[in-house]
Amino acid sequence: MDVFLGEWLNLLLRWAHMIVGIGWIGTSFYFMALDYSLDKEERKSPGVLGTAWQVHGGGFYHVEKFTVAPPILPPVLHWFRYEAYLTWVTGFGLLVVQYYLHARAYLIDPAILPLEPWQAIAISVGALASGYLIYELLCRSPIGHNVPALAASVFALILIAAVVFTRIFSGRGAFIHVGALIGTIMAFNVFAIIIPNQKKMIAQMIRGETPEARYGAIGKQRSTHNNYLTLPVLLMMVAPHYPFLFSHPHAWMVVALILIAGATIRHYINRVDAGDDWSKYGWTAPAAALALLAAIFVTAPQPNVSGAGISDAQAVAISHKHCTACHAMKPSHESFQEAPKNVVLETAQDLRKYADLIYMQAVQSRAMPLGNQTGMTEEERAALGHWVQKK
Image 1: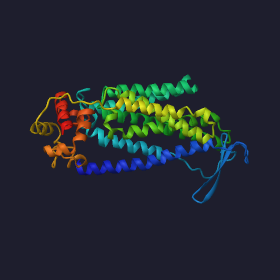
Image 2: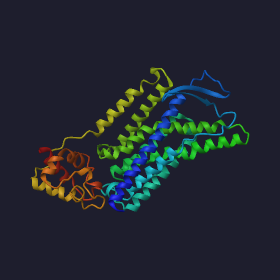
Image 3: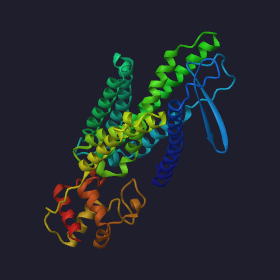
Image 4: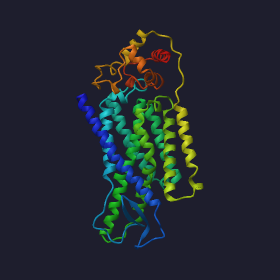
């Protein structure tokens, strides 16, 4: 595919992914907040669990939630499903355009595991499918009836996946796959469980039967899972822009800390919406803060000036060997028609201009060169790091 058209496809998919993702996340946040804010004392209609009065956009709304279903099926039902479906479709499209079509640059790191692109892609697809199936088996097993046990099991599943991904893919590819796995679990919760269960209840009503409450209970369980996974998956999806998260031996630990911080923040918000007493959920604020501080500590760069002193010409030679295939006025790398972020590294003056970025990306995080396709050695990184720190 032409690089220019590929960039436009990437941009349009990313834009669409953001739009539908905002819609999906917004409905998740809204309905969880609505459930927690229901007034169960006011029950104006038969079978109503609770009601809520709301004001927005200059208007007043009165919402009722039924314990299972209304006595009579209304002529029009508003469904919330395509936001979830399209978020997954556009996200997988981005995975294809960014990581599958440029597997050697973004997905594979020969220093971790020397894979062919087709092998990395096959592992990717298989891992996403098997990860969801394991999650589904956990939910359907006896563990699924025990909230703490299920939460711990899902946490362990994602953490094990993170460890496995970091031993197969590049750091960037590993983190994006953790996010993709969580996103797949969330989207298929809607596609395979929540919506089908709602359709079963409607079919029972059409037949004149009383809808089974268990379908609604299962759907609510999966909806709650999605709600608590939302904040971690958002950070995972932007993680490729922050190499310090994944370019070190403890990337799996960062995943664990992000899961803890995101879930506890979400729990805090949910309990605030429920109007609980602070004593019941106040612990979540320091727990989230502690997890984030731990993540900052784990990812903190270590000073490194151990490299041998080199001249300007030697620093430029290292850049020409490992950097200018992409970071040049006219890149030779097949994936780029112009230097990424307009960062050109052809002269000593260029290297001084971007010294901080070079140190972070090529020395500290080792995120560059992409996929280490040029085979940059630790000695070269140390020498370049010594040079940029002295400049």
